Image (cartoon, rainbow, N blue to C red; front, top):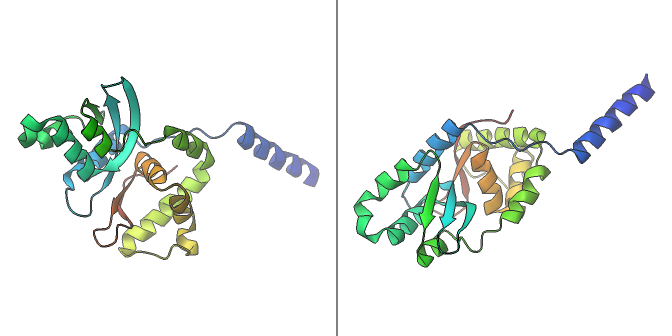
Length: 200
């Protein structure tokens, strides 16, 4: 009996190692709501959001995490004659979260050229569904407390461990998984705005 149990455990381990779990994003309707809530936040403590940025200069495309204020400024640079319509432009694209840029300054504002998608591709399979569940629980705890927890706390170990190592790229994946975050206006530290969807 023990031998069979050992074999099953080994097989499960090998399966997870050889066939990493698929990265599953939050529902599209949730991502739309998250984007709209984040885009509305044009304060000194902006929210993080994820967009699909189309670079019309060299015909490339990247999925990028940026702040709500940086996106707003980038859109103003891209459409200087339509500054009064930036709000409408942002919300009109909330379904696809796709924005076109042909202005080098606008692209630099969202850090297009420095954003490294290979880090995202490395990180996605590294955090399995079990760890995402723990991260979701930690995020909820932080949100309910409305205070900045200690980075070395066991209760927020997973969230801050990945945040410290991967920074904006981990924030990127938190958004895609349904966790809306922001930057503190006091010290720039990460805050949890709202947990829209917990990992399943």
